[in-house]
Length: 413
Image 1 (spheres, rainbow, N blue to C red):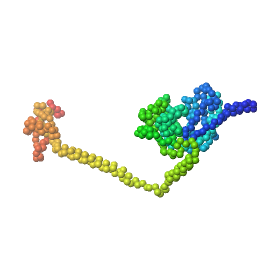
Image 2 (image 1 turned 120 degrees about the vertical axis):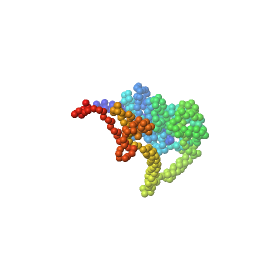
Image 3 (image 1 turned 180 degrees about the horizontal axis):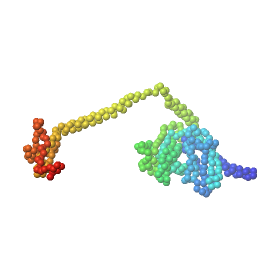
Image 4 (image 1 turned 135 degrees about the horizontal axis):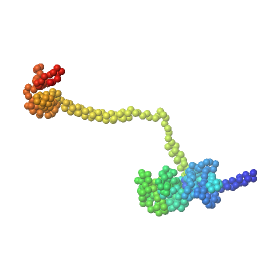
C-alpha cells in the first residue's frame, strides 16, 4: 500500500513539474507574452479548447495591477500583456502559470521570472483606435511592425530610432460597446510613443481631424492618410486619433536605452521639479467657520416675484373680460317686458272655439298683428274694470246660455 502511494506521489510531482523562463520588460513599453501548449511540452490538441491556463503572481492569487491575462479562442492560447509603470522599475517578479489538460485533467506548472528594466517614458504619444482588429491581432509581431513602419517611414520619420508601442487594450475593456454582429471586430486602442518631436505632417493630420473630436465615433470619415493605413490592413476611427506630448530634452533623444550619468542627473532634476509642483499644487482645506454663508432671501423673492406678476396680469385680463361681458348682458335685460294678455270673444255658433289665438307682448310679431286683432274683435267684447285703471282689461263676459230647461238633477232635458 505504501509503495502505491509513493508511486502516485511521484507521478503527481512529475506531472506538475515546474519549468522556469526568464523575461524582461521595460518601463513605459508594452510587454506581451504568449502562453501556449508547447511551453508545457504538450504537442498536440485532441479536443477543442483542451488546455486552460491560470497565471498569478507567485504566492499571490492575482497578477500585478499593470498586467492583464486574456485567453484567445481564435488562437487557442493565452496572452499576458501590460505596460510597467515607473514604480515597478528595477524589480523582479515571479509568475506562476498553472496549465490544465481537460482531456485527462493533467496539470503542469511553469514559473516565469521577469525583470522590469528602467526606461524613460516617451513624452510624445500618438493615440488611435483600430476598428477592424481585436486586441489579440496586435499580439502578432508582424502587424505591430507594419504599424510602426507607417510612422517611421511616412508620418513620423524622426521616430525611426525609438518608436515603440506604449499601450494596447481592447476597446470593450476601455468602455466601448460590443458590435451588433458577433462576426465584427471589437476594436483595439493603441498608443505609440517616441522622444522625437512631432513631424509637420502629423501636426497637419491633427488639425485635419480636430473638428471630429466632438463626435463619439466617425468610421465613415476619410482623411488624407487613409490609404496609407488601409494598404496594410488598418481602418482607424479618426475621432479617436490624438497626439499628446511635450518637447523632450536633447539628452535623452536616441539614447534612451543607455543609462548615462547625464540621464541620471536629468532624472533627479525632473523628480525634484515634480515634488515641488506637487507641494505647491497641494490643496489646503478651509475650516468650517470660513465657509461662506449663502443667503436664500433674494432667491426666494426672485422665485415668487415673477410668478406673482404673471398671475396679477392674468387676473386683470380675466376681470376686464368679465366686466365687459356683464355690461353687454345688462343692455339686453333693460328691454321692457309685459305679461298682460288680451283675450278675445268666442263665437256664438261654435262655442269653445276662439276667433284668434292668444297673443303675448313677449311675441315679436305682436305689434304687427295688433291692428288685425283689433279689427276682428268687437267693441263690446271686452270690458274695463271699474277701479278706473285705464288700459287694463279683465276677463270677457260669459257667452249667453241657449234656451232649455234643467230638471231636478241639473241635467239638460
